[in-house]
Image (tube, rainbow, N blue to C red; front, side, top):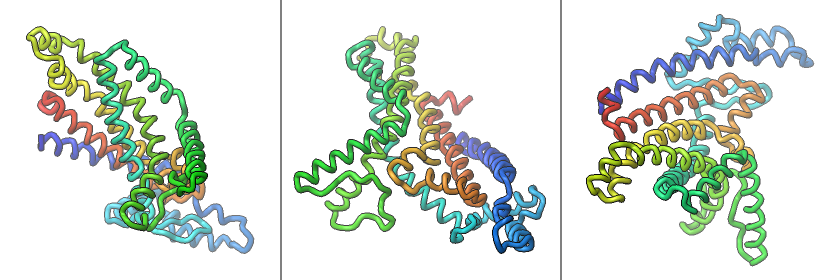
Length: 332
């Protein structure tokens, strides 16, 4: 298993290198961030040239990429060069945004995959039952609704729920803004109250959308496995239904779900843009929008590289999970 993991790691390194090259060339092709200064009152061409020189824009693109790559690997991700804004460190800003989004996504993914797998397995075992029809209808409903609709509906109900609490003389509980930078203050009970109130609505939004995908994939995969030859053989030998499901069928049925989990987690961590926008979170989604709006190439490259790294790492985790679920994969 260790050799299998190391081999996957060695394959991931050149993928990230090629990804960084393509990302840098695309960002460079988007335009010159110093060009915005041209035409401004009191700004001379000499000042524009000086800014371009300080940013390395007067060098060939391959030289700029090499310099950026060496600095990036050394931990220097550069500084934000958005015009009219204070210079901030790209690494610090990206890690801060990633931490905010990660706290949101981890809870949503854990909730979604636990409920999705459980509902999918039960729906497959009780195929065409009332529970199966209800689970299928709920999943299709979540599939058909855009994320922003789910977020706006939950936010609206959250505000109404807070109004009811306030009318009863209680504190408002559900928050629709990003968590405080300094953390939650007060004793343990107050911290739990504020933490759950802040995270519940956006976490539930992402969990509902992911839950629909997990439950459908798990149901389809479980049905296919339950009708396979080795499962029929196990039943013919008199093995109990419980052992057939969890010992023989469930493990193989989890392989497609592992793929979905790796792709879904990476995409959510890289920026749940719509959910963050609706609930006012300043995470990876907000960072991407700000970088594109102000055309901040260093900040944009930091975001792209974090995103690419997450995608590669989660796919690596899926490959390792394949080897655990089915030893034939790592022995191939």
